[in-house]
Image 1: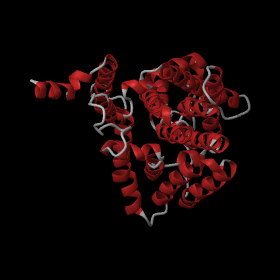
Image 2 (image 1 turned 180 degrees about the horizontal axis):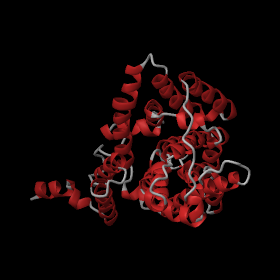
Image 3 (image 1 turned 45 degrees about the vertical axis):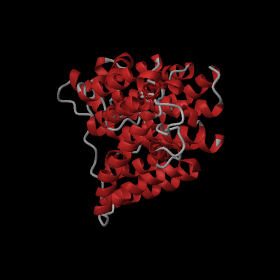
Length: 374
């Protein structure tokens, strides 16, 4: 009976808490949304499963969790806390991304920059709520709607908040189709939503090759702290556009990107142990993340309307909403929203320009914070 009692004490049932149960439910909800609703399934499914794994209780002293030195999961989590996975993901994203729409419309870079308003506004809001400079900077980046960037910055500045920040960033990325349309409707008139734009000009191969080289030089000179993310993003794009490294580009954009996405998403989910995740700070982060994302969408839309005051050839202000760097989800939301008012109005390629500009913009914003507070 004594041995049986000890066996029972080592089971997860004996150590299960209400917090663990709550997180197990959250993990199952994430998996449901990924499978049934198809909300960012490539991210939410491994995150949700990681949440389940991370909240299975085990006896003290048994090295199983991501926070236990020497455990297998802690080695995977090291790729997150050390900042290794996000740059590798940026390499893969660069190898998959076509920057032609941005190259053909350089003014769209301004829309991508305007959407970063949410980052800096939320940084100030987080400071007012009592977060430190490093914590506030890490929380603010959620407004860029870029999971790897949020994870990279928080791993460097506020690793103790990595789990809540990552979950918030990816959650709001998945909820782009729900969050952005009401703001787009509020900020634009029906006439503005029906504005049609000319097809983007064709871009030469030389321009595509020069673009990543020029961007990394300019961005790194403006914000040296962005070199890690922007550098890897543009390396991946140069592999794609050079025409002489197709094999490397395919490896980076497929196998490497998929492997890093699985490991990063799972590790982030596994880091959400109830004792670490269910805190007042976590709730504050989710609230601030939502505010940040809404302000970013508002900033892009507002700046697009301001630009139209000075442009002879008007742009559809809806594309300003895609300035957040949830690629390509925000651009698709703009396309679907515009076609609701004019079925023949195709804005996808136009929206992709500020969308990819937002990726660069959020990385630069993260670089600014990194250089200031590191």
